[in-house]
Length: 383
Image (tube, rainbow, N blue to C red; front, side, top):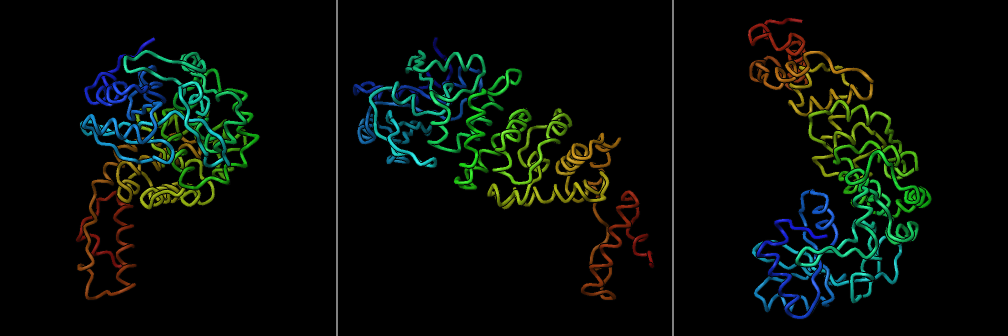
């Protein structure tokens, strides 16, 4: 079997491979680029495995006029930039020691040993520069069956890096067969070693959860996480029962990890996953909107069109209610509305806290009127 994607024949990529192979070294595409090419999915990162040591990689690519950056040289990785396109070139490796968070590696001479240190069989597929597939561990059959399966012993793979627990659920959400369900051995190992999640950094957990929740349908994976006790390790207090309802309400709306996190709830999600400031603020706004009394128009005014829509979908999912009739028009009206009163309209008669209180009262009256009251009518309100 061969892959014939445009990226594999691109001049800049061929130049990187030629620099290695002309010097007598191997150059094999590996991991996500091979997997996604076989699935017909987009390829964003180009990873190349080689028997050349990092110093040798840097020497031969520079001799070929390419840029070499030692981005991960301690782990055998050099970033080779060809015509502004980065290629991660990593020496074949094998693990010799691990503590569940990081591994001590030794270099290997071929893809067979290198394949055994990877996580899932579908990620241990290699391709020569001409596109011919090399499959040391039977990953092609698993990929074709959409089966996410740990390499060799699932428990051993997890003990090497506990983040692989979350990757197992994330990869099933993106690449697994939803009808076949999750691999039983892998699921059992994830449940048995879920306590190891607590040794991982919040940043790594957050990155994985956001990737998982950005999948078109993460529902089965998240449900399995909850049943295996993994979700509670990541997000204490989280409840996944409303997620399938939200996914149904989202039909036609692009997946969004923060929206979906808001339906899971949990204790201090922003801290648990080290969300960015903007992500944390948006999550808080959505959670507050769920419990507010604001209707679609008010939500549109306060949050804008997209967040108001998200808040209404979250309410519908959590309270198991249909979205209110005419909500789109009401949200659009609110998002376009502009409060006609300025602080200067009430000054100097009102100052400080009294001014703020009056502005809030008039804004509430204006929203309650369906944004119909004008400036003069609002200023004429006496109570």
